[in-house]
Image 1: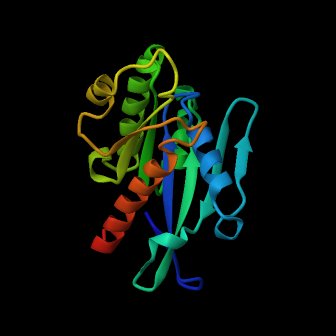
Image 2 (image 1 turned 60 degrees about the vertical axis):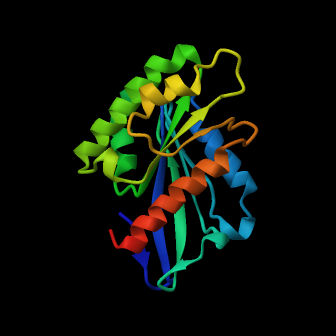
Length: 195
């Protein structure tokens, strides 16, 4: 749920990058962070325990304009990839405004992708959210690798509701900002509707 800071006249929105382990969530955030102007972003913070890591930072996109005189600040988070970090995943989803599901396009990662989407749906439901009713996009990452599944099969397995989806290679940045712009646009649309 968006948080409004009346003092700074900002609407704060939370975007969570979700997906299986090593699918490219962190690489997405690092690419966005590196390419965002220093004056428009906060610090990137990594919360790391011995076994898991969560990254987050906030930025103020200057090109997206204002809503009723308020600027929009986006807070980007990644979740730990492995499903056994479920408690952390649930906590990070609290107050989410939009979700980017990052899928690993490699054939051998298909089961992990499917398990992760199901886990996302369950964890959102436990927080009172319905994946089909919140801003949501899918990114098919690692398209540059040789053993990738076709986009048609990825769509069939991971995007049955036909939300906006993007092919990407987060290491080079291909598709990274397109994905982020799509989720930001959906969130702003919801805010303007007064959801």
